[in-house]
Image 1 (cartoon, rainbow, N blue to C red):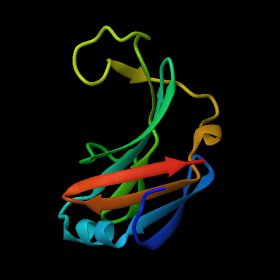
Image 2 (image 1 turned 180 degrees about the vertical axis):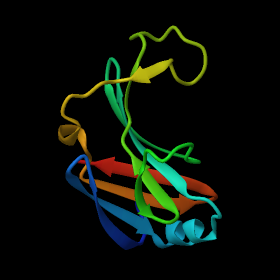
Image 3 (image 1 turned 90 degrees about the vertical axis):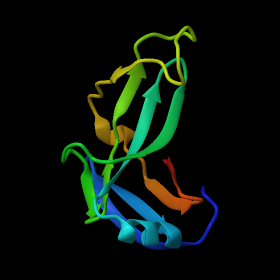
Image 4 (image 1 turned 180 degrees about the horizontal axis):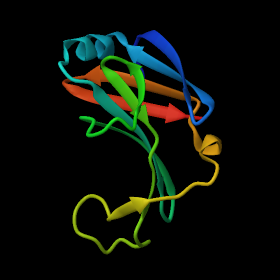
Amino acid sequence: MLAGAFGAQTRVELNGQPVEVYLSRAAEQALAARQEPLLAEMELYFSCLIRYKVRFQEPTDSSGIRINDKLQLRVPPVMTTRCDNDYAGDEPPLTAFPIEKPAAFTPHWLQIDYRRGQWQGEFGY
């Protein structure tokens, strides 16, 4: 789990499962200062290995679950288009990963922090 003092805690339902969302005081302040909402994606990355990663971005649609007026949440399962290290750049090409029972892959908790001008996140089961 992320280090730091976490203040706000919210429980939301995602894929029919409860998810506890914890915001640090710094994250609460940074969100309050934003004009537009922030999208936190709890990415499940299927490839040769499985990786959990929280990505922060500006929402481009309304497919996320609203936590409050400044934060949305989404869990996109993705996979690499091939399982090798022969690709240019940081990440291999990704494609959507269809899951028949998304509730089974829904995280139980998410922590969000804001340190040195960067969003940080971690989630788990």
